[in-house]
Image: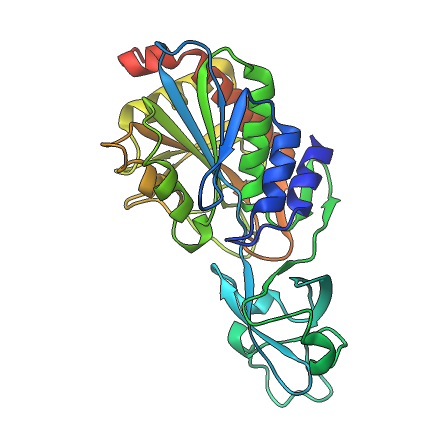
Length: 336
């Protein structure tokens, strides 16, 4: 599983440029057939019986990143953020520029010996230094070129790992592993969606052509951080996070909780009083309305170059989803 996760997070996938992630998913999962729609969603299927209930499982492929805004006369690249990014996490970091050829650039940092204040510049004020002049860059990097974090994944203590784009390659990994466990036992559509980080755009398009009986969104959510005391975080190692709230069908929530309890899968719950910051906000409303649920994986330092997750939490999500699919007939009947 570590190798599969490493492959997924190493793939370049800034929103709108998810093609490398699609290739890895097709290598890592086990699907009867697949198609790619007009905005890059990867829609995979395993079919058991056309008369049996259909289940949609969604995980978004895209990651936050940047887009080139302009290049000044000194060859410094200025960017805008694609998705929500805190500039405090960027100073001195390496970025991967996906131009006509890949380049690595460094986010410029004023040394403390020369700094006049401690103000952190906003993302649009940052300069990315490739070591090349404007003339040398002109045939490689253009306005609109996408930029992401340099790929990496390291093992930390215990079962914790650090890397970029765990939001939401952990969800992609869970669905790939689940597809291998389930095979053709059920009618399952796996939606690996694009552009979630810029407004759940991929899921909105995909659900116009998919009409499942029931759907589950799998995503990352805020993990605990020792310097923040917040009710919206959940501890790494605490298992699957089961969402509840108006965006989530209460019956699906109850079934997921009862199943986790009865099967011994570690879990916690999380309340969302408004539409969730996930694809579920779109999934619930489309195709005439979809009975939907949310399962998440805690992730520290989200949207930064070095997020942190516990692999055991991914395993908990896979186990819970497998049980969900096995008992989907009971779920649809309301036999909780």
